[in-house]
Image (tube, rainbow, N blue to C red; front, side, top):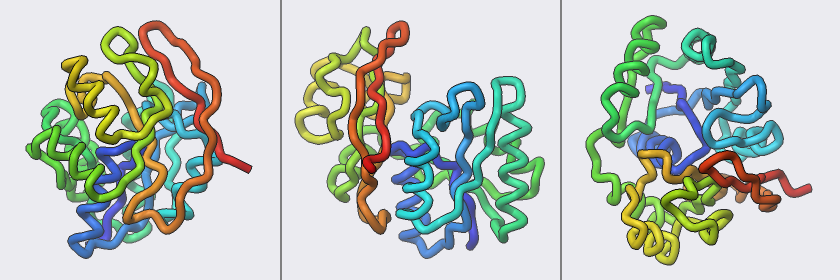
Amino acid sequence: MKFVMSYSCGKDSTLALHKMLEQGHKLVGLLIMVNEAAGRSYFHGADPAMLRQYSKSLGAPLILCPAKGKTYAAAFEEGLKRAKSMGAVAACFGDIDLVRNRQWEEERCQNVGLTPCFPLWQRGREENVYELVELGYKCLIKSILTTVLPKEILGKYIDGDSIRIMKDAAVDLCGENGEYHTLVVDGPIFKTTLRFFVGDCIESGDYSFVDIREMA
C-alpha cells in the first residue's frame, strides 16, 4: 500500500513510519506542516535545511504545507491531495490515544479520499519510548516545559539517563502533554545520520528550546 506520512520529525511519527515500512508499505512522501511566520516545521521546529536532510535520509520527497493558524486545516488537506496525486491511498499518523486529534485527522482524510492509518494507536506510551531506544533511534530533546523538566536534558538524547530524569519528575514519559518535543536524527530507517549542531538555548514563556541547525 502506498502512503504519505504526516511527519513531525519527532519520535512518535518516526516510530509510526518505522512500523509502516516494516509491514511492507511504500512511502510516497513526507507531509510536513510549516509555520509561515517562523519558517520552520510546526511543533518541532525543523528548519528548511534540516527538512531537506530528512527527505534525503528517509528517501522520500517533502510535501511542505505552509500555514497560519486559521489556514492549517485547508493547507493540510491540500498536502493530502498532493500525496494522493503521487499515488498515495493512505495517510499515516503517529497518534497514540488522543481521540480529538485522531478525529481531526480522520476528517481531513475523509475529505480527500485517503484511508487514515494509526499504527501506534492504543499502544502503551512508555512502551513506545523504550522501543525507540531499543531500536537504536537517536531522539534529540529539542524543547522542554521548564515548569516540569530541568534544562539539563535539553539537547540530549532520550536514553536511560534522560528517561530516569523524566520519571523522577513524574511527567508523561511520551511527552503527550507537551512536556517535551524531539527531533529524530538517526535510526534504522535513516540512510544517513543527519548532520547538525546544537545552538543556543532560547526561552519562550514556560518553554525552553535549543536551536538545531544543519552542520555545514
